[in-house]
Image 1: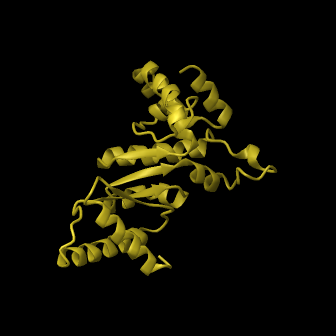
Image 2: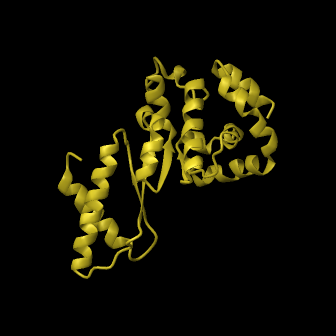
Image 3: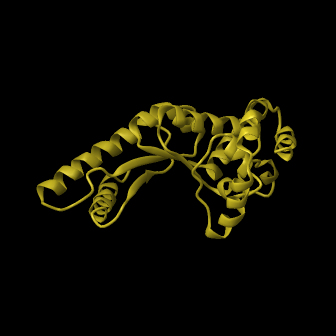
Length: 205
């Protein structure tokens, strides 16, 4: 938002491109609901300008937000009232939740996607989106890690984003999953006191 003119130029270009194929807008690093409101305002103003100039665009273009900081994860319900969909960015969400830089060798061993705080935040975002009826997806290393696929399925995730090389292994995990068993394990997963307890539970799934 500090570079408003550049941002509006980007939005205008994306809107013009939307006339030639399906585009969805995804705003990164959201932490404040005003960021969404400002984006919506800019988007509507640019739509009016394009319409006045007779330039085609997709009037129904969807606006989504990246949930990658704890502030957005904890208040995701408010964000979902303003957005069409959300995507969970696990790399940054884990880093900011645990205050651990995964690229810093001195503390990277503390960067653990199975930390109970991370599990509870993921469950909160996914279940809130499901309750409101808005799509939620996940990108980042967790989504493409076949060792974590059953956990994410248990938490309710149904949309995964990953590198092509990871697709077959994750797909196999999904096809082999016992959804009834996974859903029954959710209360225990959410009550786990540490990452080792989560791993022990996942070993039985």
